[in-house]
Amino acid sequence: MAYTAVDLIEHKRDGGKLSGDAIDWLIRAYTDGGVADYQMAAMAMAIMWQGLDDEELGAWTSAMLHSGDVLDFSDIGLPKIDKHSTGGVGDKISIPLAPLVAACGVAVPMMSGRGLGHTGGTLDKLESIPGFNPRIDQSTFRAILEEHNLVLAGQSGTIAPADRKLYSLRDSTGTVPSIPLISSSIMSKKLAEGLDGLVLDVKTGSGAFMKDLESSRSLARTMVRIGERHEVSTVALVTSMEQPLGNEVGNANEIRESVDVLRGEGPNDVTELTLALGEVMLELAGVDGGRERLEIAISSGSGLAKLMEVARAHGGDPSVLEDTSLLDVAPHEATVEAGESGYVTRCDALTIGAAATRLGAGRERTDDEVDHGVGVTLLAKIGDRVERGNPLARVRYRDETLWESQKARLESAWTIAAHGHHAPDLVIERIDRTTL
Image (cartoon, rainbow, N blue to C red; front, side, top):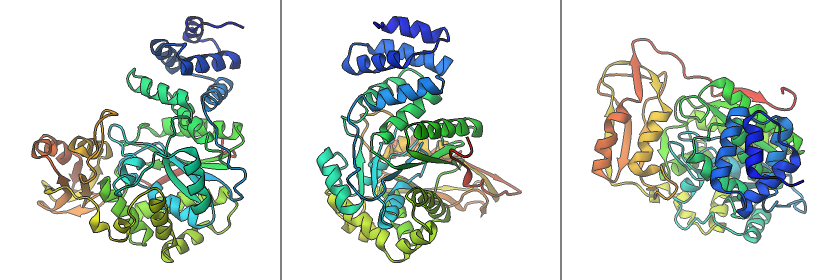
């Protein structure tokens, strides 16, 4: 059957259902250049308004997945399990998590992304390690995975190329918040890794893309259904992003905190979420006693050793992981102080992430340069008692003008009240095939 982009756009715009064949044609034609960006932008907006049902979404994800290479690691005898986070502030979890799980005998073929907007990117943090190269070809990817059980790479240009085009288009056309488009984007890339199981960390709250719990639940359920439909065991944990994870926001400083976790010295929230996600990854791999095994990998040093050997395999200098004082630090320091005494009732992830980004720790445009030495160290979070003049955060920056432009923004991130309350629960709920 012959299709045209205009006919399919109008059909979806008017609430019609797209057939699997029509979706295959559309994604293939868009990848090949036969469907123009402006036409796919119109389709993305139609999908944002009308949605995709489960059959459409399954077909859409499959077409995105098969627009490029699909990796096959079936000859590697270990279970292949990965984790994906929908993004947050201070979210360095992949960096301690992946080597801990790999040290427990699971293959982790992890493809990560870069930060955009207020959220940090795992690849930007890893590139704080001098020489670390996440841009590797498929043969190198396989070789590192076979030797070390772990690879920490960026998305190859041949993996889901339709998603690469559509992701950039969505960012510039106001269609990012569509659950079908978000879920198919994430899952098409992850399913291309040849996985046996996938754990999703779906953030909710101020610093997340999904600000309210119900939207986060809906996204989690949608992705779990896609994974199960493609015969990949998938579990989602919905987790809080009202305040940043851990005490560090930036790049090099988040590598330091990740190493602290691997040494058993990390902040409680980062350590707990690392263990919670790792336990589910090991569960999907069929490994018993997951939490205890992860704790042993921390206490024995095997998790940190794994990160160091994989950093070396990617061309990085592992000495900065052995002595994290060698990592980059921006030259100037300032302090954000409490304007009154009381309890911290708000430590806003979005505000802190946006300020760190504008200071140079992140990028607002895909071609922005990241300053790995810039960062914010949080000294007071929700529930903490502070006195007037106490430091709330320490900021490392390189550009005095940028600091002056962000000082008031950062100061506004904290609310202090006479009566305190506890921080929100870190892990809110688990969603898997039994709870759909």
